[in-house]
Image (tube, rainbow, N blue to C red):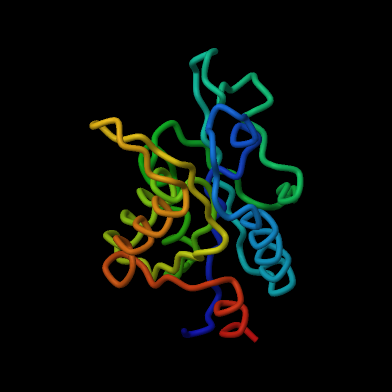
Length: 185
């Protein structure tokens, strides 16, 4: 990987995902790995961009006036770090993310966050489709179990693994936190 300045995206690392209604989750270390990456980015003075899902629906866990909308404490943004609010799965739709990246000469995007098959996957697909060099960090994202249209339940690890497989080498390069940090140093 070329080691030019690159953007770190934290997609929806928010308190709403602490809610038990989500059910079983894989990768309990995702936030710790995200935190390690944030610290590295800050040391290098590279841009850290927070994507925050915000809902106008008072019954949503991401309601704009609720506590679920807040970014998790262990990765709280600094005052100078960019926060982009979104209302849909893609971090690029209805936001200034693409313009911000292009205006700042950021052609490489490293994606972390929650959840792997939803907002992380959608953002990764669009990043790749828009021509950014896109990296998704496999152990800095997580998934929840899902029941499909036939009422078949798929555990969180299966959902996570299949989501990564569908993205790898078509929309992004999938790396672990250690692989990425080894490439940086």
